[in-house]
Each structure stands twice: as structure tokens, then as C-alpha cells.
Length: 152
Image (cartoon, rainbow, N blue to C red; front, side, top):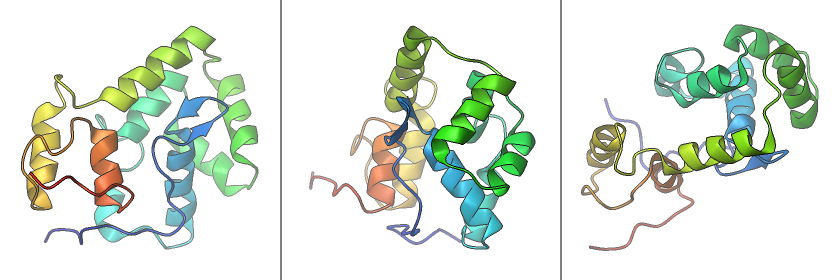
């Protein structure tokens, strides 16, 4: 059964939003907090966390942290910035250049790369043609009602 479109989840920020210059990390924290509060839709639960290929998995791999450990730390409370500091001290403290590469990779995922097919599948799931958007971040923005697709 397809998820509703647009998918409106109060408390879930855009993947473009940054925590200390790092895209996506705050969104992953939102998903952890929403799950703990019983507010993350059931259809979202299978792709959260350490599922290989998910953005959560990619973020944890980049930071060299265990998702379950981050989840436990997040559930203790604390600001996004303090949780990112925890991640840096328990995993990788990336350089400015590494953060720039991470941000560029994540914001362009789906554009002429191995993620393009999945992007087109997701567009089809919500009734939009391939090429409506070029990246998964743009898809997320459309799917969550923050970006209105151009009529083609």
C-alpha cells in the first residue's frame, strides 16, 4: 500500500537542513525522536537506522558511528549540536573538506548515479514522471510538501 502523498510528518525537517554545517544529520535525529514518541509512520520504519543503502546508514558510515548507539544517546536528550559532538568524539571528526564532499554527495544523490533508478521508482510511486526532480533530496522535498513540482 503506497504512503500518502504528500507525506506530512510534523517535526521532521528537510534533509537540506544542517547541524554545524552537516546536511541530513538533524533529519536522522528527528526520525529517532519521532520513532521514540510513536509518531514515525509505520511505512517509514523499515528504512531507518542501519539498513544498508539508507541515508541513515550512509550518515552513520560517514561518521563511523553505530546507529543503535546514536539512537540510545539521542533518547537521553540533548541538542542536535551536542549529539553531533558525541558522534564526532565516538567516531569520525570530519575535516571541512570531508563535510563539503559529504554534503555534495548527499544533496546530489540520484543525479546521474547509481541512485537514479530508485529516484525514478519513488517518483512513479507518487504519480510523477521521471525527471520531475533530479536528486533524492529534491524528491524528499516534493514528497513532504516543501517543494511543488513543475507541471511538465
